[in-house]
Amino acid sequence: MKKKLSRSGSGWALFMPKTLLELIDVNPETDLLEVKVENNVVKITKAEETKQ
Image (cartoon, rainbow, N blue to C red; front, side, top):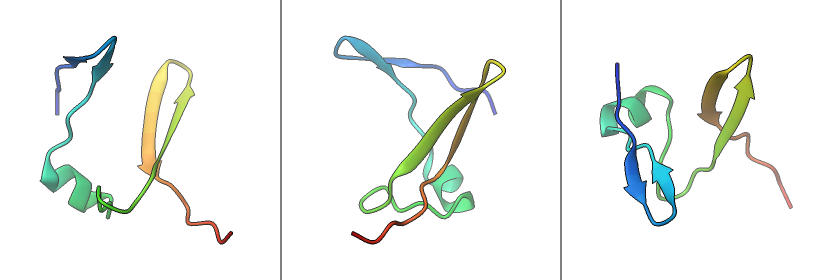
């Protein structure tokens, strides 16, 4: 899937379709995402829940 970035304030945003969020089991209202960069590859995963 190819996606285009959109201007958002002074930065850029990546809009993710609902189907993609469902595939990684993410609820955008309650879940956090983990973003990592490894060897020029951006990896986005559902963040593990931590108890406070």
